[in-house]
Image (cartoon, rainbow, N blue to C red; front, side, top):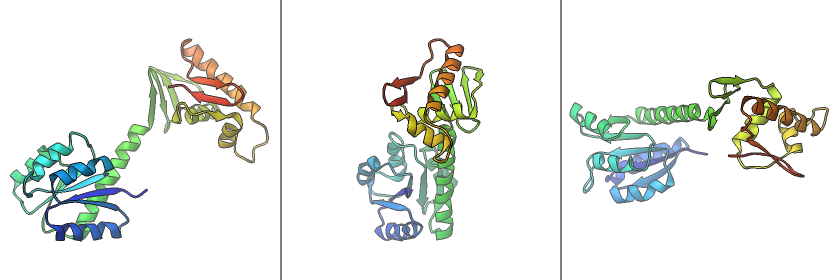
Length: 226
């Protein structure tokens, strides 16, 4: 899915210039020419906002603060105001970057790309860990911890835990789990899933007798309880 960039500037020619440049790069572009239009577009959840400073009515600094009440995406200020005070004020208002007009297209697109890349990297780091109370699953390190204690799971056992935990409350048939983890060409059948789930449950129970996140859906398969 393409990243969405919200352009905010009261000068329509500049908005059209930026929009064309970003659409050529494959971005989805939303356009607003004032504060109220901008706030009305925030439910579309833009991935990045490009925000002019000098606008009639609500200026860019005020609008940035209003955006920050409901959105955490990167905000790139673009402005003809070039003093250090202006830059500092923009960053203090909640902006992430400040680009002085006139600017080159290459720098403009590169800054947007860099902010979106960092945002995805930060989001990926946050999603690396799945937490359910004291139980933490580290998808990258392939490790399950209960508090400070690491639980010893085999590769297949961990794969089952991760699959179910990534889709809490979704029911997976044994056959589906087997195909996803062992593969379509594997020699065996879904009964091995039952045995692996038993071992996972036993290890979780040994660590904490009250811990039982995997539910059996009789006649179907298993699900992870939130």
